[in-house]
Image 1 (cartoon, rainbow, N blue to C red):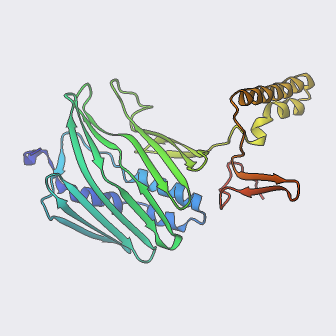
Image 2: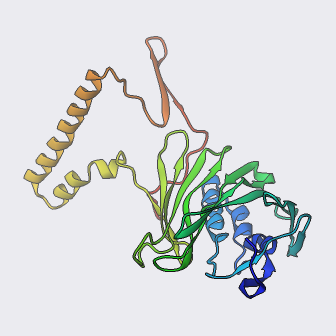
Image 3: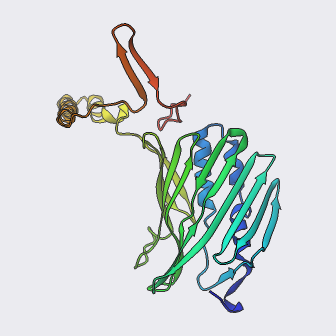
Length: 304
């Protein structure tokens, strides 16, 4: 789409892509590498990925890059290089390296716009890859869709689903970028919702909520199977010395387990542990082997 200069901001789309990597107030990328555990690094990568999404003004757009156009910027020890490798269709490639922090980044993305009458929806095709060389960790992620809405209220939103994954650690994040569909709602506008979980078991580790242009929070997710959750009603009644309520709550848990066992038996479905592979022989007794190599940070913390 060719725009007259009155509707251009004074920079190229190539520069806008690059700025999402190097134009930052707080160096969130460096913080990722400073985290001691793989879980904390993953959480930081998710936070950094969210920070690369920026609010955009309505009614103006950057220049369309010409074929072979480049943008080369250094900030600290981070060196960023972009090139427009195709014009029809438009494809932008990005490489960024930081030898000091052992960071490598490669992006290849192509915007595919579609006109729907009341809005333009642009899907950003391509993969974003981030490597921490000394940690032997590679993170892959995609981009949300860019939506330019004309009616009923003009505006620009980032919408859709984003997946962040680290194959080496088995951690994954699903993020949903949301916006106003018709009537303006402050609670939905530029909001984000999602979770961080273990790919192997689908166990949720953190729940993510907030607004990507303001504050996003990662909340510890306590599983329904967690001991303190299973027996919470019974424990609360015992502490209150309400023995009748404690008996009722305990009976309710036991009956629910019997019901689940009957349902499992009717479906001929064997129960399997989430975290261990269990075997038993008369000669050697019980053998329990962990499924995951490392135990992740827990949702319940004990203070020293």
